[in-house]
Length: 347
Image (cartoon, rainbow, N blue to C red; front, side, top):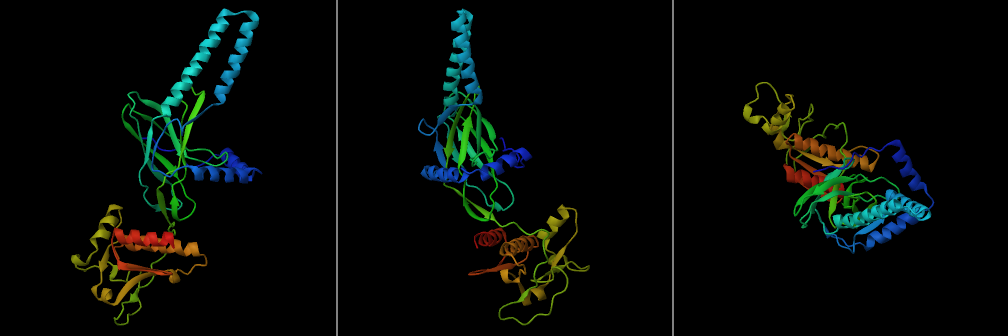
């Protein structure tokens, strides 16, 4: 399995990307690309045929063509039999290479696996399965997210065995949270001579959910609120003394220790144990409310809530989430954490 190239760009690549965005024809190029991408069918499985595979000479291919013209003219002028032989030998090799290059991509089947949610600011990898029914292997198959303008592609390369499959991971880094359609992908090959480029465009129908980036460092969790219908509670003291959980004290019974949290902390080399407080649990519950994230920017408040959700989940706490028009009642577990993060991504 091959992975995509790192996402960090060189200063020259960044300058080229900036120049492409500031180009006077950049708006027209973006409109044209938006138009033709909208004409591509949405499908998570694509079989490459002559109708959706394109071919053109590369820079090396054009130089080879120019060289062949010069050799042919020189052979005609000086009546060089060996010159004719070399010219037609190279031209025949280029024609055979063009046929092999086109057949190397044609007939492949690309299948996109459903992408997992991830946090904004991190790179996700789309798993793409490339399969071939041909009795000979295919070499030098590259896949990437289709860029705009002159932005560089981050290729992931693979070889496909005869009548077999290969798995490729293509990197993608969205710039905002929410539900996004998987971007247009491109596949290409230049095997065997590099004189021709054969490529295709693919528009998957799948969508990827991007969670908000959690605030770092994690701020202290808010204090617990009185349970509905319960008695009032006294102010809590210390970090973690809410919602029935407090820091471990010497002499606490072992049955009150939150062992899920203990296993995680001991695995990292720390000993931050947490004990349950049955009396406190009867009086308070933890609500993560957008109104309690006292930050001026809306996205910063969303990031703080995401950090609180992850912190409460790590501590094994029961917590609820309040957003405008959305209220998720206190619970624990992986499904509850995922539900809260999805609500934050889509709010």
